[in-house]
Image 1: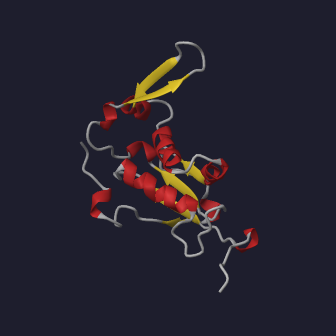
Image 2: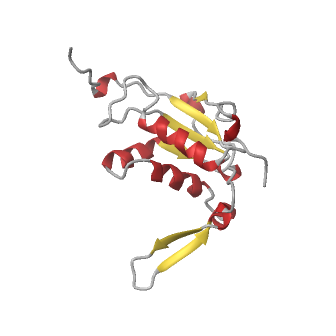
Length: 154
């Protein structure tokens, strides 16, 4: 018995469209990370880009449970004393609200070259419009997968 390993020419990628409106952030990010990595496929190979291309719309309407809207997000500018922070609510109200979802997905992937390559397959849009109609993406209904995936507005 030999172990089956995929080759790059055997990989089939699909385009997936996910509507993030009303979906809990962490649950949505874990589903997206699994789709990007390709773990939902029977032919999953850990060292290759097996996943699908994922388009997320309405990223600014994602639900955040508990007190996580007031949780500070830190980063450092690289200069002495250059630590900065913003709360998740400030980021969602700001110019680029899709960064909350992008960072959540990025942190659920392993920190290596492959995950940086996988992140290029993710497209996140704050509004309902996206420029990928030509790829004819199939819709993945995350809300109906599990009742816990949605929460009422808090």
